[in-house]
Image 1 (tube, rainbow, N blue to C red):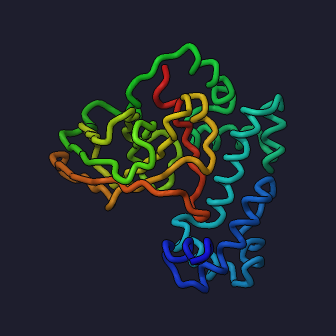
Image 2: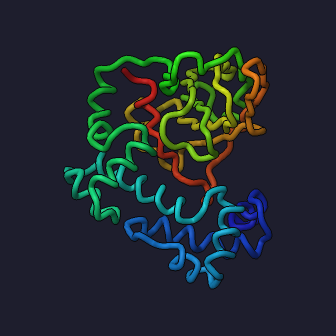
Length: 264
């Protein structure tokens, strides 16, 4: 089986739909500095904008414009870490014309501001690890609900396993709750708020340090909980395992800054 056939066999959608979407995603990744609009992407696929949007979303899990935005911010993270470009220059480099819009969206998606993200290597050097904090919430909004399970199919025992409960299947912003597992596979999330969440995982090789986790490349393994997690009464005890796998071309970038969640 060829690599393309192997990828196709694991994705939702018909082979024809996947064959239409994959080249568009490849172009999006190669030209992430371009501010492609939905019409531009649909034209690449030779589909109407509405049909393309529906097909792409069914395969990638998020709409194409949202996927494109994620790629632009992934590139922004790389530029902030590896160049001396100012935040303003990075903003323009990834296709934004407004620094305010860029900074606001970066903070929403990554979990820290562009300036804070750039300072993270220094903070990691002198900081200490803590359990990933829950998102700030009003008193009384947390409950007795518990989610517990196992991380399965780990490629390298002893690697760093980041787990987070997110409102969507896209790892962006700060999770409702999260954990960093080192040399362990069992997890428990207590006192969760009501709502519907996805349990997402990112696994880094054991040979890499926390600073390396700022730059996620294709070595990272990913995972999604077996089912959506729905908490209504605040008394639920939900078992949800996470199956780890290699990333697919259709996976959106992990935008949340993982070390920022576990360093203080």
